[in-house]
Length: 197
Image (cartoon, rainbow, N blue to C red; front, side, top):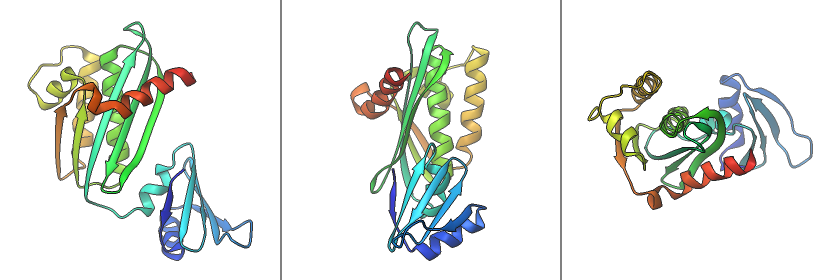
């Protein structure tokens, strides 16, 4: 549940311009409430608390835009193909900006890795980062995205095309293969998604 320190009047104006539904607060301490997409917000004197299935729907509008972000992604399949899950984490200058993990149905390990990268890129784009450093522990995905390795599988090729479409939203980007221990939080989110499902 993200909590942003910000001016509630400015936040209300930004959300109104974005098409959010705004209403009065429910208590004397609440300045206003807002709903946009799959997120809800409650404003207090110097903070806005965001809740819901996709807090990024509101948080991305209220956070200052630009800057450098770091995206960690991971995906896994139990059976390859089999039940699959993804995890991604975006880290900014102040720590974790957003993270997500969920089951995605039946897929291969590689398809799950690509899906995690796509979901993380969509979130990083929504948060408005200018520069994105991407890190994952799948050498195959990293090398295919860089163009060092061919993508023969049609499903993976389609995902790679989507990744490159999303990368166009950033002024600069890089993608690096890292050991699993560097990618620990994204890996944890995959395992948590399996446990929750």
